[in-house]
Image (cartoon, rainbow, N blue to C red; front, side, top):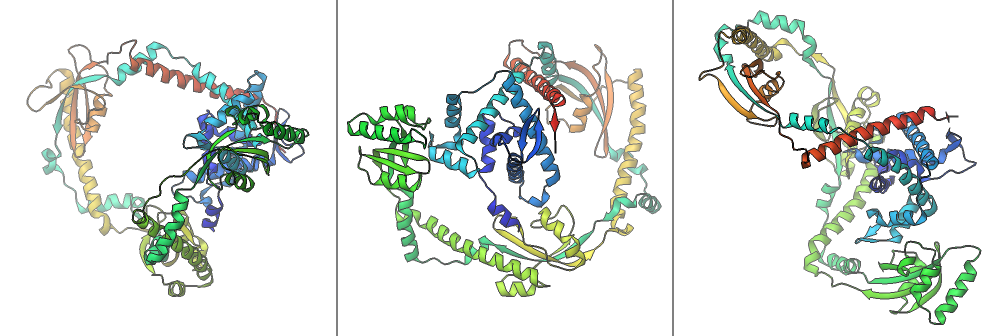
Amino acid sequence: MLQDIRDNAQGTIAKIIIAVLIVSLSIWGMDAIVGGFSGEPEVATVNGEEITEREFLRMVQIETQRRLNQMERPDPSMLDEDQLRQEVLESMIREEILAQEAASQGLALSDQGVDQLIVSLPLFQVNGEFSQDRFVSFVRNQGMTVAEFREMLRKDYVSGQIQGAMIQAGVAPAEAARMILAIQQQQRDFRTLTLTGESVADQVKITDADIEAWYEENQSRFLEPESVDVRYLVLSLDNLRDRVEVSEEELRAQYEQTVNELTPEERRTAHILIEDGEQAEEQIQEIQERLEAGEDFAELAREYSDDPLTAEAGGDLGYLVRGDLAEAYDEAMFALDEGEVAGPVETEYGTHFIKLLDVRQSEPPSFEELKPQLRQRLATQRAAEEYARLRTELADLAYAEENLEYPAEQLDLTIRTREDVTRENNEPPFDHPGLVRQLFSGDVLQEGFNTELIDVEENTTVVARVAEHHPEREKPLSEVAGQIRERLERERTLELLRDKADTMLSRLRDGEMTPEGDDWTRYDDVTRNLSAVPGPVQAEAFSLPRPGEGDFRFGSTAVGTDLVLIALSDVTDGEVEEGSEDMRNMRMLLAQLNGQQEYQAYVRTLRERAEVERP
């Protein structure tokens, strides 16, 4: 079931998030994918403007796919659908509020601006050039019209101007930036004296009675987690591919087909598009007459074409291969000789006049160069077909049988075992949350059923059953006595060292002794990222207050079973030049953070003032 969901998911949906981010859109902005459609069921109204059920469900689908794409192993069962729907609706409400605010401020984006925005998006480019076919196909795959997509970009871009303007308008005092940089670049001089655990080892005596007493007081620390011993089957495309044999004749046949695919004939065309409308027939007649009169095709494209993305370039669509555009366009394009014009040609986009500008085809690679790749491709294709067939069969057998022996025998799979699988921190494939959740479900754990098929990786499926269940239990003292002894020895060692350190620190503060001598290690000009100093020592040294001139500040910290005394002698703030690049970058960062906070406060205020109704 999980694989079916993944197979049917629109992988390109995630790309729209990336594309829209390029123009400073937040996730809220995706609700504008469809405009308002009157007469549809609504999920909310914002200051009288409706958010339709159609808009909402589409946004839920997009956000669901986005979150699945963020998972290392996408699993829809891991999503809280109720929470997701609530978050999506709230984000759509906020975005509608922002769109209304942008409109009230007179912010707008012209049709030409929308066109420039679309052309600039890498998602719609092929070899660095805008591809109208890719653009139209993508939009329609989202269930939108081109007009709806253009309006979505317009609304989100304009709303994004408010956010961008407020963030850019953020300010930060120069002194705040200087102080942060000075602290970041601060250097400290200090000395350390290490009191080793070995120096008090003879005073550390831990008895069996001490261990038993600590065990009795802390038994909850020594619980053996619930676990199961598992028997399971793995169906993998990789394993199936290893069994596939491919003949030389098949490879050569595949080569002939592949060469045509790798080096297809490319044709560069220009077109004049006339969309359906009241004047379409009249315009088509005019274009046809003017072409027959010998007028320039490019000029006519600029004058008549309803494709704003290519009209200014004389209708130039760039190089295309068969299948890039509609079938009727392909047939007309490949029937032309260079310089010839065809039309009118009817497609789902409207009526075209087509001119062939150029034809090109590159030299194909040799058979020997492609042979390994071809073998891999054919083996993968066959293994994929076999994988799909066996996966369906395994699902049926695992559901019908009360064991794994019969499915394994029928599909030539090996039954594997794994002991002590817990609810977390397992090795693959039992690091998959969905598989573990099923193992500990009532149907599998208590009723003895097999799990559903779980796709733990792409093209790797697992079905499992519980062989034995081990409830949570307390570990006996005999298993943990050594661990307890080590803990008590360390605690007792540090306790003795702290008593000794307290006495020494008192004498140091009173001036009865000084941090001098061979036992003390000196560190000068230590920065916050100096790795030569143990982490606990560095953290303590940089947490001590600044000492007076000629004075010390003292502290201590544990490092393993040792205790380190620290005597801080000097603190030197970093030197920050007012016009330095570091200063400019810090002020910019602080300003952006302040601007972001102001923007968030602004959005909260708009949200509080808005009249929002939910059915």
